[in-house]
View 1: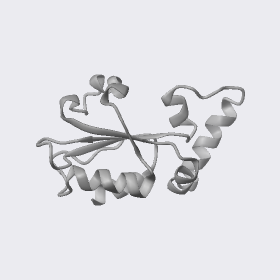
View 2: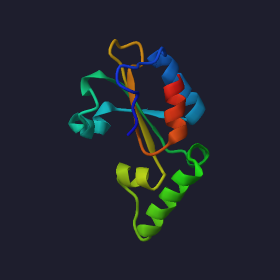
View 3: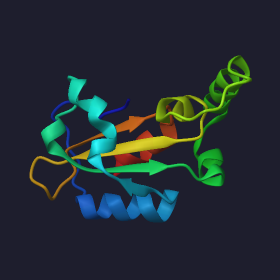
View 4: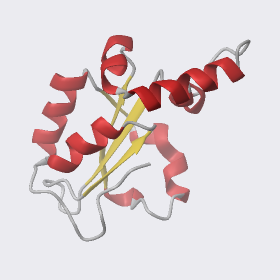
Length: 129
């Protein structure tokens, strides 16, 4: 998971970030209830989650991951050669899924984000917004 440094929110509106994720990465909105495990994450303020997305388009993901990330996904798939990846975390570890959680303190501006899955390009893009 990746986050903004403490006390460093962006100037971007949630609407701008949502548009960016949908247009740039074919992200799809998912219900917050799909991420109930975040209630146990001490770094996530669950009550401030504004919107959640997932990205699972193979070509989009292929273009997002750097070589090290692709190698980690390949190693995971090789280690679980006979497995069928059905759970979100299995898909994330195999490089078949990324999730993004956007938090807002005021319901308008992005105050924090979490990326489920290792993807430095996505973290960089969200941090730069």
